[in-house]
Amino acid sequence: MKFRRMQVAVMFGALTALTALSPSLHAQDIGGWLKRAAKQVQDDISHQAENKVKDTVTRPVKKALDDAGTHADGNNGNARKNVAETGVAAAADATDATDAGAATGDMLPMPAPKLPMAAAASWGTVVVNADGSVTAWPDESDGQAKSITLPRKAVGAAVNQYAAFILLEDGSVMGLGKNNYQTLGIAGDAKAESPRPISGLRDIMQISATYGHALALRRDGVVFAWGEDVDGLRGDTQGTHAAVTRVPGLPAIAQVATAARHSLALARDGRVYAWGSNGRGELGNGAMGAPAAPVAVPGLDDVVAIAAGLQTSLALKKDGSVRAWGSNQSAMLGNGKRGTSSGDGNVAMPAVVKGVANARSIVAGEGFVLALLADGTLRAWGFDGYGEIGVGTSGGYHMAPMRIPSLAKVVNINAGGYRVFATTADGRLWHWGTSIPVAPGHRPNVKVPALLER
Image (cartoon, rainbow, N blue to C red; front, side):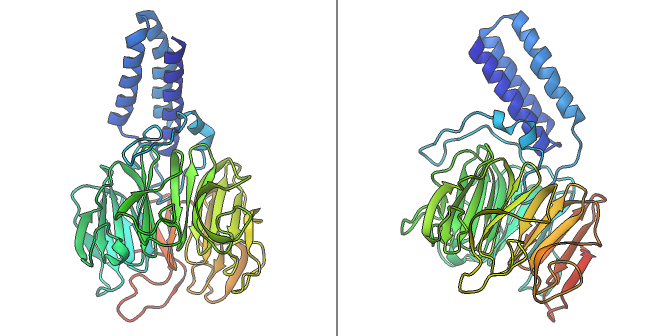
């Protein structure tokens, strides 16, 4: 009886957390949770106890869902700040699985964005529209927007140097572009002129990509990697791997982020794991040196979101403060200083970013950082070579966080390459940094937020 009560309590806590993560959780998913909870109770306890469970579990869950708003971030790689505050720790303890198909945690819901979001890198720019359709501007094309035909609605996207990846509502991932370093998850040099599935990925809830590799987070907390196979990007230092592999040594994960040569994973208990290159201290373990397998960043907990940039790592804590570590060559640490190419100024353990408080999400691009605060305003710092800080300048560095004065009521942010995106509460999508599209004619940089017409 006590065991069943504990199971029901865990389900209630996990479902409450998932509602906070995605207030637009589908009705069929909710119904499935409630049916499973009721069935487990019916198996071992009396009708009277079952009615008590309905009073203490089913109705509170329904009320929580009714009270939840209709907005979902649709954010590629940013956990909602209130996730940790609403019971994500109540999910079942993770157990280390021994095969790629084993689950390590409860199944989190698929994202269900109600507002547009965008992703970009050297391949180009991809916009997931509010209706689930996708518009793309490949940088090597004629510069015209292209509608991407997909078998189902899209709920997320990520882009690296060679390809674009689109997350569909059924949890599958489609790839489009070149196959350099097997970034499409297949052998050979074939290209994909139209989207094709990334083999072996199912029930995926988030994707992250940059340079020649990518990560995918499955709903049960398992992480997969594909593409470039160097510097421990797959989570170990083995010579070669299959096209798509599971990242070993991780507990149940809630969010992933990847940069050129290292990656981060946010565990459901609020700890951060890092792996890959550590030449500038980006793994946060107090040292600089050889690549490493996934290991928890010491002394860092209560984290609700992560971001990874150019040899730099960032974490957003539950209290709204931001920590940064790794290279400061591009002033990404936000400490008022800038390091040098020789490695001066590197920080090998998490340090507070001053000038940022009450943040709710963070993203990183190629040498710069953007933070969205709870009041809907933005702070940006780091490399400003193409206007990506959004304050009307280009060239040089901003070594401490600056407010972007021309935007308010922002609800979602993303960045990739030298481009930045923000969605405001009215559903409009803004961009700045390198122009969209780049071709033809290499259009001028966008130094302040501008509406992205599509």
